[in-house]
Image 1 (tube, rainbow, N blue to C red):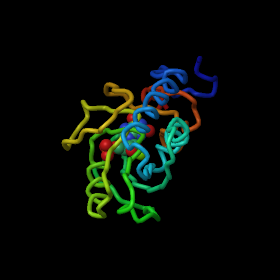
Image 2 (cartoon, rainbow, N blue to C red):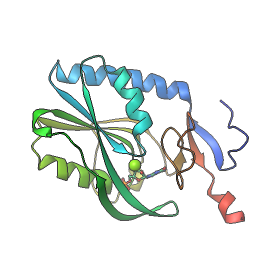
Image 3 (cartoon, rainbow, N blue to C red):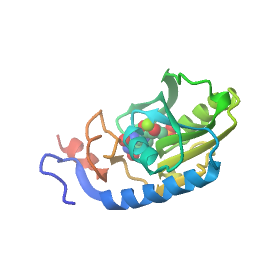
Amino acid sequence: MEPVAYDKHIKQVLIAQEEIAEAIRQAGRQISTWYDGRPILLVSILKGAFVFLADLCRAVTVPCEIGFMCAKSYYQGTESSGMVSITMDLEQDISQYHVVIVEDIIDTGRTLRDVVALLRERNPLSLRVVTLLDKPCRRKVEFEADMALFTISDHFVIGYGLDCAEQYRNLPYIAEYDTAVDAEN
Ligand code: XMP
Ligand code: MG
């Protein structure tokens, strides 16, 4: 799909809509086989992972419940400051569930390190992490997801739930954000 005209920050489309859809079909099948009918809670980290969760939960073919948490990483422009805070917590008692954290992207690894540590303290039946995107070249702390649908190099990306200053979450594909546009202005 071609970038739409208003998107002056789109440098290139990195992952097309159809590629995302196919990877999600496979991920949904994998999650469905992992738990064999046991109680699953898919936990979406807001806001970035809301689109991924919406598609992923419909690719899961066994009963599952969903929950939301809001974790904010503080950004200066497109650079993480390394501070993470939980601004909205889950409503479920996760000790009754096999928890799958559904994240949009792992960058430095700090957000998930903190979220996983917090959720482990609550004794879920088990805990796995599924991320749409992984940028391993940017890690500052050791962290590996149980499943990463796409590994990308060091681009700041937008679309499919991911934003820059709250814009572009509604793009149906993943695109590279063009930082040069801001530098020119
Ligand atoms: P950390 O560094 O804690 O970051 O692994 C995870 C969170 O940082 C945001 N992030 C991005 N957001 N495009 C975005 O729109 C990116 O390229 C990007 N890299 C990191 C995101 O909120 C993620 O949950
Ligand atoms: Mg996020």
